[in-house]
Image (cartoon, rainbow, N blue to C red; front, side):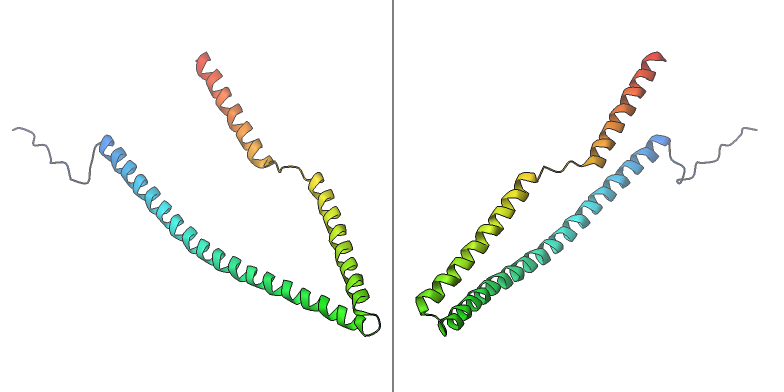
Amino acid sequence: MTAETAPTPESEHSASDLVSQAAAQVSTLVRDELELAKLELAEKGKRAGLGGGLFSGAAVLALYGLGLLLALAVVLLALVWPLWLALLVVMIVVFATAGTVALLGRKEWKQATPPVPDDAVAGVQADVATVKTAARQGRHE
């Protein structure tokens, strides 16, 4: 009597088949995740653009409001001083404020240094050290 070999079920695959399937699935998963990330970024970009536009509109309106406030100051001062003197005083106050803010900004600008991502640098240094250690151990084996 000859021994009959049972046919291998289709669910059993060779290791190379399983590796290629896993690689294909990982590739598909990565592509899908990248597509999802692109869609999310596009949506966030639209919202950021809209928010930036609205914020810019608010800034323009605030500048007009500041102009009206300065005009009110001139009108109020013109009730007790001549108009030219009221305008001169308001103009000097505005320029003095602008100069002070500019000097403060310049001071802060000079003190600023480019940020260094400490965590990222430390992580890269640790990775390099690990690779060097593994390379040394590989030469000694």
